[in-house]
Amino acid sequence: MKPGKCLRIFLTESDRINGKPAMEAVLELCHSAGLQGVSVTRGIEGMGMHGLHSASFLSLATDLPLLVEAIDSPEKIDQAIDIMRPYLGNRLLAVWPVEIMRSGDTDSCN
Image (cartoon, rainbow, N blue to C red):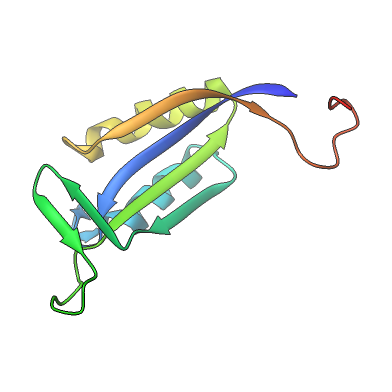
């Protein structure tokens, strides 16, 4: 296994960066930073600084939470954060160390 970092960026569907959907802008920034293995997950409910976001039947669910998650080398994650920081404003980021292993790696533990 190899050391890595996981980066998670918390957005909502209504967030915008430079006039485009924040999710799209963040994915472009991740690509330009050379990150691989970036995923976006749409939440069904969440609560944050701006209140409750829900997909309940009683609401028009247009502001649901989105999680952008990337796993890569510590250097690439740090570089990506430096590139993205000017665009993210006060959005929440979480970073933590991970061990990276692909199922086909021959140097993994038995």
